[in-house]
Image (cartoon, rainbow, N blue to C red; front, side, top):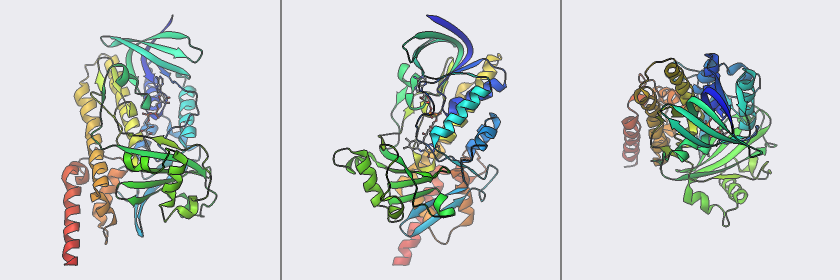
Length: 416
Ligand code: FAD
């Protein structure tokens, strides 16, 4: 079997792996990326949040992405019947980017991967990790190419950015059930022939069908739009009698008074994908000689589009810490990696849970709006979930519940 020797091996060329490998290359580390598929490939996760821009910028990937003309995302709109709540990222608490993009991931991820190659990084497509053996922090990874040939890659550190492939969680028995209740989604893309002119046509929107069920509408600059339904797994399963994903998505669209005219009669550009029980977790985020990043570690829920931001946040941090370790520093991975990442995960977990209890929806649609509360929540939705100056970050576990209870009390008093 042939052998290769690198300092860092990155598994997966999604956003997380591209950010990690670019940062390492920028710092003169001998890094290699192996990717199971051939790009462009379809993946879900099309609505970004501003925090990702910090990482693409720092990794030197921003200029290539910016040239692509992806649709700019300046905020997000939530709809519930006749009620509307619009967040504008330029009107948020604290520092941070005011905008990001909404993107067809096949094109976006392909741009990232090509830029990684342009930077001189050795990225091998159609190369799947099938085994890994650790000896202290050193490891030997066995990969298989599309024609079935295997080879060994010896490395001093492995960053597992394999997303839903979850390579190390599977091989090292690190899988752990998510604390969130099981939810599923079905989505596809449509040619958006009924798209309105102006902002209405391009605004990213989440239409609440029932408290726990919502439809996403993510328009792209190429004229297509992603449409998806999310809800408890039982609910999504029952949308079609025979498990037909296209029938289920059609039915979901018909439940949206706001969007049925726009999407009710258009064809899906690919057979809708059914993503069942998508939340996942792991027992640990690191071990001797490796770190798990992005969806290879924890995935919560799509409702606040936090997936890619965690993927790039963890990809960047794992790369920085790995670099310092390779340079001989002793790294406290528990404190500097796990505790840091899990703080942000905890904040978003609260927001996801409070979305599905309906408490956060109470806050979003309460009128008159409290501008101060809205700006602080907006900073969280932009992904700035490590800014403890923001009470909606620091006191996340109580503040939403308490405010929602006050609103409910106020409503009860009005009614009596
Ligand atoms: P990925 O983008 O999944 O990339 C991992 C790569 O690793 C893949 O290219 C894969 O082929 C490769 N790989 C897998 N196995 C192997 C192997 N054995 N060897 C080599 N390579 C391998 N996030 C958002 O930010 N916004 C959203 O709107 C959003 N919506 C979502 C909706 C749903 C229903 C779901 C389930 C998720 C959503 N997400 C969203 C989450 C988003 O998809 C992920 O968080 C994001 O893609 C993670 O990026 P990543 O780089 O970790 O992994």
